[in-house]
Image (cartoon, rainbow, N blue to C red; front, side, top):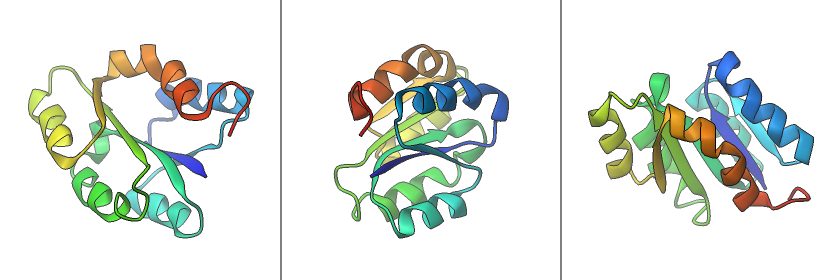
Length: 121
């Protein structure tokens, strides 16, 4: 099982990816919705993190496509706190948690810890 982080923001995502690597948690970055699909083609997805800053339009379709295949998958989405409509659309699309970017930045370690625990998955 893997986690997939849908983002193209290398600067913001580097802390999250570094944290995952340091604990041995299987989180992989995907720079496009198609890359998420390719990663999910041959491995089960336990966690999907979506950066709504760029990928809000693809989020509903991706969730609708992957959730039936991976019913245990948790979907976390984050975006600018000032974009209430995008955050609400993510909730409506079926995200388990929708956070502002600042909240995600603060809670990323907790989210990964809850998904995989202390020693990796």
